[in-house]
Length: 210
Length: 210
Image (tube, rainbow over all chains, first blue to last red; front, top):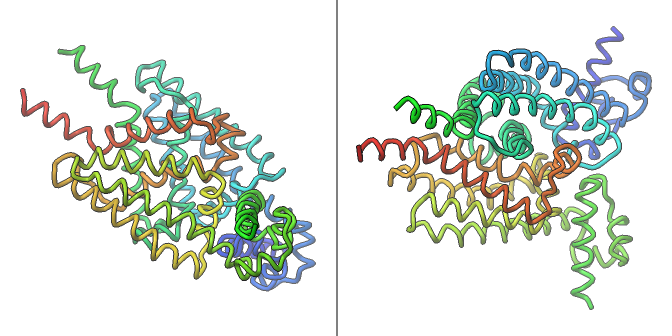
């Protein structure tokens, strides 16, 4: 019973933080939506900031676990590994669309908590991506390029649909919560890897064969 | 004197909305930062929502004007035109980094105002991008692909650095306010156009020549 009231607080918080924004949501709103009293929220999370920190940690712990698991395939090749990472992260965001959406939005505001989350999780993510790109250059799979600029592009492509869900629905009529979207967009991400990272290398190989 | 107090309110609002978020900023905070009294803000903008609407309109009016001006080069070819659009929009965001950053963040929250802004400006932007892609397919410059999915990728690449300025600085050590960033990142955006949109077409042309 206790566990389920904690879960319902988290579910309500994600829903409200996503639709009204973190600052635009009060503990009272969350308590009402979760059908608990505010003391229950205080008991589990302290205050609203504690609840936000719980959401951040909950999201990024799993995110980094996915990243680590996909990274384990690096010996199969950098392109194969990167495709695995991209597929797993896209699927994870797709499964947690409301959480991803509000977490990414709140990460754009500068605060002590955001800086701590970045110092822990974003640096780990960067470490793995960097390793994959370095291996790709070393094994002549990827065309040499600035790693931070590759991360900007990859993260931009990965986060865009989940940072702009209303735009996707209202303007483009694309529904990022649908399975069809995940499947179709994954092909586009693979294409970015094939065309932007791998393309000239293949041409060189063909030239050698000739 | 009146004009300058209006301007200083807008400047202070952009700064605070960006650093603390729209909901996390009060009219009192803005009045203090702009060194005006709250009645001055009420006189020019009504309330905080009016100030937000002013910022949205101010940002997107100029954004769409840039888009329209760049679109005028369409007769030179779809790839040339798209590169022009991308260069002008990147430069516009770069020039208005704080405004772009908070406008994009607030656009991710569903509200009546956001829906109106999308129905006006985002649909216009989509119209121009759609025209460019259609011409590109028609003139055999671009490989055929779903237009909404191309817009997702292009907008993702274009907005990422400005939606995540702290991440860029703290994690990647890339400073999106520097001229160097704009120049370097523009090359990456051109590359996306060349590799993702145009690449297979060129191979076909080469095959025809052979």
